Image (cartoon, rainbow, N blue to C red; front, side, top):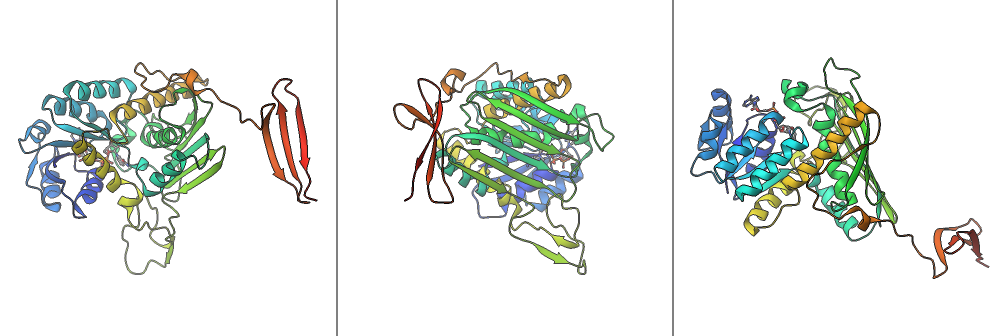
Length: 399
Ligand SMILES: NC(=O)c1ccc[n+]([C@@H]2O[C@H](COP(=O)([O-])OP(=O)(O)OC[C@H]3O[C@@H](n4cnc5c(N)ncnc54)[C@H](O)[C@@H]3O)[C@@H](O)[C@H]2O)c1
């Protein structure tokens, strides 16, 4: 497919590297940047046919089939509006909107124009994440009870992120969008997010938005999602997930410790080590293939294949809207300091009653609470009688 890239900054280059570095059939042919020098430099770097300083012109170009939004958060909506008007498919980076209202408008625009709307949530496409999801779907860790996701780093690389009006918030909107969607996938996208409790503060930077936050998202089936996000963390970019289920556990470490550790005295250069790395001397944690570790190639493969196959991608504009609705509740809770409901005027998953918890039966008379092998080899069973509610123990002796 022939792509128009909107923006020529940090993520635009990551996307371009992912799309053009391997042998692929989808190519960027056009870049829009408001600054002509940047547009030309980007076009030269990636051998593009065209560049433009007009967003409308870039999108409307007759050869362009799909628009890839890599602009600051306050420009996502206008870009989607133009793409919908021109009936060009659209892929939008995260977060979809600054608020659920903005995201809902973007969702409505793509749906009524009949165009494809892919939500570029790359961290739901990392090889580790995709493999974990196979295990979760096949029931290897049972019913997911708690899914914690953390993204922390020393803060973003451009002025507009730090401007609450333009970005829509601080670490919650910038990093919480990843964490919330990771947890939602693990818990099950059909399970309704009900309410959110969030602590947020501005601990270090002189900004209006939060630079650190921790939140809990309660789901209709009793599962809890947890996000830990910060622009105050020192030591690089920490991307970790922990999932606890009734039958197992998954721990993922996606960036600082990927199995590649090195030491250098610093002799030999001051090059780039990895995204948000704070040092290039001493012990370092480089990342073998950042684009892959961050999920970009699998993400684009899913998006373009979904367009060809006329199916939905794994991450849609609807998902982006649900994420924004959860984050709206997090912002509200951080200020009211109470659990705040997730307001979803458009809910397409299961109704909450369908998600009620079912206890595990031991036999027709008892529920199983716990079984454990003791040091002497005996097996101890803790059971609850269904009728009376009485809790008892039984021991199956080894000898
Ligand atoms: N993992 C990820 O998926 C990921 C990572 C980083 C950024 N992002 C997202 O990508 C988007 C862009 O972030 P970035 O890191 O590339 O930022 P950036 O500042 O590096 O690049 C932004 C681009 O937009 C342009 N721009 C800024 N203000 C503009 C304006 N008023 N009009 C037209 N163009 C303007 C800049 O010149 C630049 O080309 C954001 O929505 C961000 O959340 C996603």
